Amino acid sequence: MRIHHLNLASMRPVDALDGGPAVPAVCHALLVETPADGLVLVESGLGTGDVARPGELLDREWIDLTAPALSPAEPAVRQLAALGHDPADVRHVVLTHLDVDHSGGLPDFPHARVHVMAAELEAALAEAPSRRYRPGHWAHGPDWVLYDGDGTRWLGVDGVRPLAGLPEDFLLVPLPGHTPGHAGVAVHDGRRWLLHAGDAYFYHGELAAEPRSHPMFDVVQLGSQVDAGRRLDSRERLRALAGEHGVTVLSAHDPWELARHAGDGRTA
Ligand SMILES: [Zn+2]
Image 1: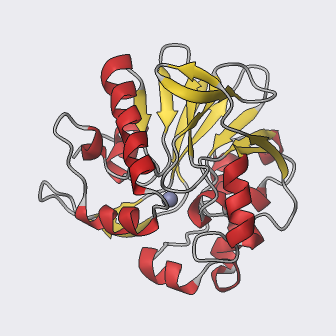
Image 2 (image 1 turned 90 degrees about the vertical axis):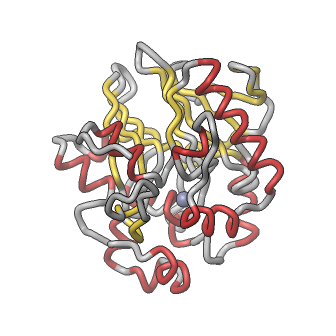
């Protein structure tokens, strides 16, 4: 399977801790070309509606905090077209959670099945409209496919589920704490497991041998978590998956991780 690493929304620049230039935070998404199941989009970022009508779809305080670029070229539906794909071929969208910057692209793929943890949809519907959950992102009535935590054990993590209608190269991996139903999405590319961990951590240094978080990301990370203990447990699981099981783990907003995967040579 071919996997593209995309940035679906540039946001407020983040200082490089090694003294390099600040770099815009990203919304790292995966576009997977499958042999028999069309295109699978992991994460949906901000969508064309958010870019065109931010005052209507997004929360004003959230815009002030994150300073999204709102570039018309960044939504997934635009990047797919630029890659030569038909957006109608996106049959599945898999979300780590329903925060505004992860669910905004849903209206651009109204015919896709949308996979998410049941606890996450329940929390979003109960809380919306709020700074983090924006009902305009699901007002079109997505074809939800919901998962409880009742799954199998995978590389030491409990509650892991295969995704309905997809081969077992795709798994939903519960990683709660940032939100109630937050999960990672594992994809096997034929050689190795790649795990998109969403907002279960924000900075690559958090998974290093000597963990180091980022003070700017921590403002967001600590301010938005719903359960600190579960968040830290989830991060420990990620550290074990990367360190003991050789899983390639990535997060949603770290621009240096995206650069490494997108292969443009930037490191930090
Ligand atoms: Zn996020």
